[in-house]
Length: 253
Image 1 (tube, one colour):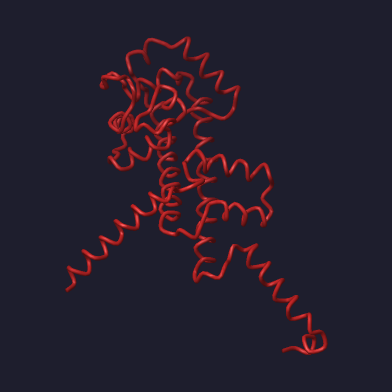
Image 2 (cartoon, rainbow, N blue to C red; image 1 turned 30 degrees about the vertical axis):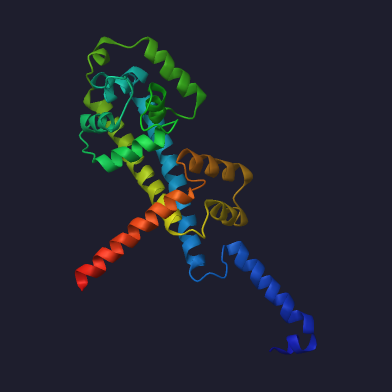
């Protein structure tokens, strides 16, 4: 005990309170490893926000630099004609990516559908697909609508020039980075029942994030269905993980 503590009996308890308050601000609690896990989650949230910011820039570049791009091009890219109901599924997503030279497996295509499926029925509507390319700027949204009205014959035949393909591919590549980062957060939350996204937002708030920034972060997390991971999802994941461990143990016996 320091001389200060001996001379002032209350000083040690005061210092303990300060330490605990500091731990709370940093996101720590008494659970072993929780501090590191929360820091990991905070870092992933930052990465997701950065990815969304870059994705928005891709949308803006696509509109600014490709005068032939409009909402009709988007719909033809995903080709609803192959579906009886006219909605969009994983096969449409894979087809759209293939059009610009990108091969997509079913699991990643499923993540794209889940991200933009507005009513959680496993398929995307016209509006959902448009949302993939829709910028936040109201002015740019109106520009896309104006272009759609005056769609030209070349895009009506489903032809995409190399220039347009390149910018759509840039957007798709950034989209994949964004949804895979979101999936890392999803898995992290399922595996760690003592960690919540709200805790990560609290840490960011304590480190100077403004109210406006936090609302932006929260909206992004809500868009990716990450604000609250349901208990049944967590149980399903942990059950599958436990089964895998048992299988591995048997293999090594």
